[in-house]
Amino acid sequence: MKLHKESKGTIIVASLLFAVIGLISIYFLKMWSLAIIIPLLIIYGLVFWFFRVPHRDILDHKENVIAPVDGKVVMIKEVEEDEFIKGKAIQISIFMSPLNVHICRYPVSGKVIYKKYHPGKYLVAWHEKSSTENERTTLAIESLTNHKVVFRQIAGYVARRIVFYCNEGDHAKAGHEFGFIKFGSRMDIFLPLDTEITCKIGDKTKGGIDVIAKMKE
Image (tube, rainbow, N blue to C red; front, side):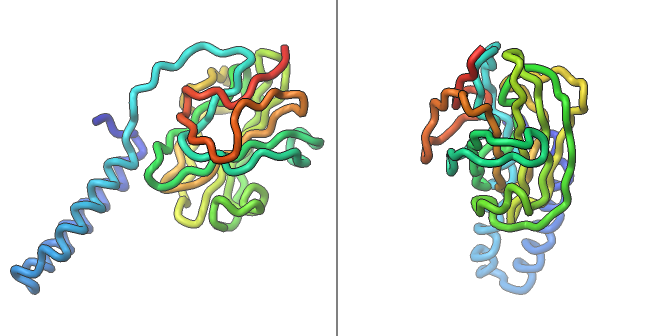
């Protein structure tokens, strides 16, 4: 199984911590140490599972909006996007549990025209106010269909490490990686009002593969 490059530090810390706890439990608990070691091994395995990098066959897209993450669609509504669009937009929010793949992908192809990091709170990621109050990054792309698409990585109560690799002026390709969020969080996508939404609340998305909307050319 291929692991993401962001896993290195976490796995080193987890390995040392679990080794110390395991040795202490064996020394003091003897035969009862399995009650500690078995749950530790399960958690240790879940750490590796969290950082997995599954193979995805990414296609070329122009008008399609691609799911930027694996997760569950928890919100589709018309909102005011005040940071970049400064007007009405359709917001699609996808919640990622700690068991989801946490690679963040571009939802559309085009040019990165805006990037900003915001420090903030750590409300639970499905809370509606997390979009504007939590630690987050906001990015915008001028799409191949000449639309401005805004999307936002949002930290949650558990996820407190947002990573993004892109810069203004970069070429964005729908479905390809631009960042990573550790241990459960949320992604918001803000689209033009005339966008055709092809997903619904409750849908499970596969990042880089599933089409969640289509923009008019």
